[in-house]
Length: 218
Image 1 (tube, rainbow, N blue to C red):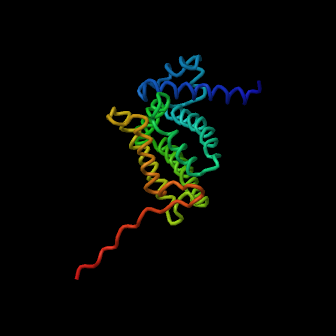
Image 2 (cartoon, rainbow, N blue to C red):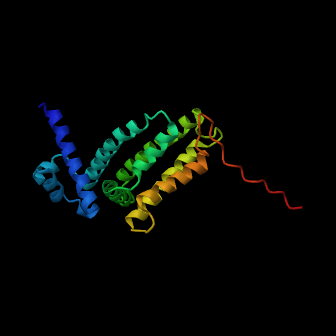
Image 3 (cartoon, one colour):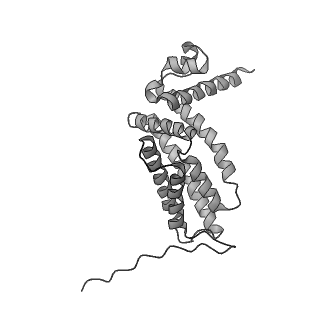
C-alpha cells in the first residue's frame, strides 16, 4: 500500500476510534490511551498523527460528518422535496441509540468550541452545511409547488435547525415526553406551519394565513 494511502487509512481508524470513545464516554473520556486502545494501536502511533486533543476531536467530527453526508445525499434524491426534507430532518433526531450517541459527541463538540477557536470554526462550518442542506430542499419544494413561494427559505431552515438542536439537548437531559414518535411530531408540526398543508394530487401547498394587521390607535 502506498505510504500516503496508508497514512490516510490510519487517520480514519483513529478518527473512528475517537468518535466511538466520545459517543461512549464523552469528551472527558477522550484520552490518547483510550483512543489508541480503541483503534488497536500504540499511543506512540496515535501521537504520530495528532498533536493535540483538539486535532483528534476535529478529525472525529470530520469522520462523523462524512458518514452522514452519504446518507443525506441519498435522502435528498427523493422525487418529492418535501418528503426529502422531512426524512432528512428525521435522520438527525436522537430517536435511536446510535443517534443519541452521535448527539453526545455533538454536545461535547459544543463545549470544546467555547474554548477553542479551531473547534469553533469547524462547528460553524458544520452548521453552515447543515442549514444549507435544509434550505436547499425548502427552495426545491417551492419550485415543485410543495411549499408557499413567499416563504423565507433561509429563515425557515434556521428554525428547523434550532428545533432539532432543542430536541437533541432535551433528550440527552432525559426530559420526558420526547419519544421517537413525539420528536417526529414536532418536526411535522413545524413543516405544516411553515410549508403549509401537504399538497395532494399535484395541488400546490397552501400558505399559512397571514397575521391580521392591527389598526393604529387614534
